[in-house]
Image (spheres, rainbow, N blue to C red):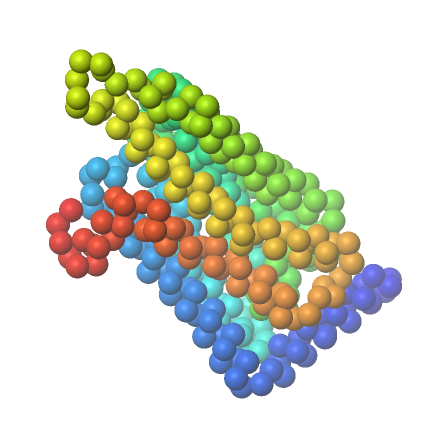
Amino acid sequence: MSKLEELLKFHNARLARELEFRTTPVIVAESSLTAVVAICAFLGNMLLCVAIARNSRLHTPTNVFIFALAMTDITMSIATMPLTVGVLISGRWIYSKEVCQFQGSFPLTLAVISLQLMVVISVNRYLCVANPNLYRRVFTTKKSIGFAIGVICFACFPTLSPMLYAREGYMFHPGKACCAFAMEQNFIFALCMGLAFIISPFIIMSCLYFRIYFSVRRVGRRAVFPQESNSNAENPQRTAHVQEVKVTKTLAAVLVGFSCCWLPIMAIDQIDMNNGAPMLPRQVYYFYGLSIYISSAINPVLYGLMNRSFRAEYRRTITCKKA
């Protein structure tokens, strides 16, 4: 056994002991908090999907991607979060090896799907503001559904491939209370995947939203859709443009929220890869796992806070009023 393998085994054993021998208040606090996040992710995203389905005015190409994004978060809340809650309650991995492979690959697949959907959304917003004619040709409702399905299929290959070639595949990480990819032992694959499917999407999205911001600021609303001089009524095109800018601001806020959850995760992964073993305190790794789950729960809140149409439809859905 090499020194690196001994170091990895030592810290995994340390984290396993700390997970097993937690005090009762810590067990209750950690498992309850994770369960609350899971419930909020499920109910919030279900509310978002129902709101889009009920209101025909929300049946837009952009909302096709928002609906798909919400479905990935719902899947995360029912397929993987309960497994972590069970581990936090019991203090050890209580499931089979096959379940470990599933829990390790599935959240990663959903995260990659979410990121790729957000990239497509950023392209959607950029074309909508910068080139409305091209936007209307490219992003029809049917084409948007096709794009969403393509993203889902594309995301499966890189996240499932470790089970085909990696020696360990996905392993139980006692600090994170879930199964995860052994990045320390598969550095090259982790680096390539991080650059291709995590870092690159963040860069693309940031550049597009910055271009949208400066485009709107430079050109101005009147320059893009000038009002008719012989009418006091508001130009419908200009009104539509203002609405699209508001939608873009909402989706930019979603990107910021997603980044706040995932940037610490990427930093922790980078530290572990540099160290060659999970040397950080167990509480840091618990925060790691919780941040992944929070990223699935914040989107419905942001839509409700930032977008009047979603907020009104939330209210009608909760009170069972017609759309």
